[in-house]
Amino acid sequence: MQRITITVDDDLLEQFDAHMLRRGYGNRSEAFRDLLRDRLERERFDSASATACVGCLTYIYDHAKRELPRRLMEAQHAHHDLSLSTLHLHLDHDNCLEAAILRGRTGEVQAFANTVMTQPGVRHGHLWVVPVDLQLDSHHHHHHDAPAEVPHVHSRPRT
Image 1 (cartoon, one colour):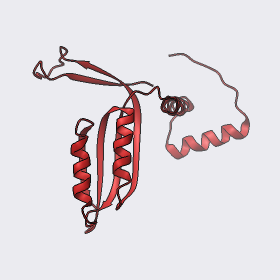
Image 2 (cartoon, helix red, strand yellow):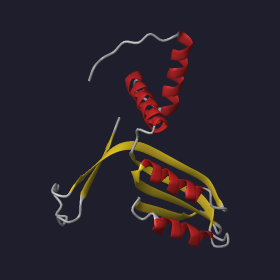
Image 3 (cartoon, helix red, strand yellow):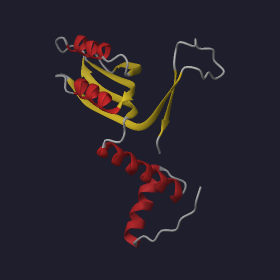
């Protein structure tokens, strides 16, 4: 880790310190590192250099909307290779919240999220993603004993 010195206008520093307090940061260094990571990740996505990602797709939908639960399930099954886990929560008699943990090629993850979020009856959809380097290793095993034919996947964040 390296130490750097930056010069910042007083009013910008005041806004940054207010941001730190709102978010609960203990020091400026960690707040600055998070802002820098966020900016670098956004630039990767904008430049299409983020070939793989992990993400969380969240959305609320009306389960009574005609055929919507079936369409959502069909979309999930059609993209089963992207989905690691899904959490389903009943908010009230009509509304459900789902959170899907996804991993795969960035374009495929974004396309799947768009397919889900644009269904009539789906509201408050949001996809949060982090670029990763995917590494498949069929020979590496940690302390668990997965069969050799099941590849072990590492998803290392890029920042």
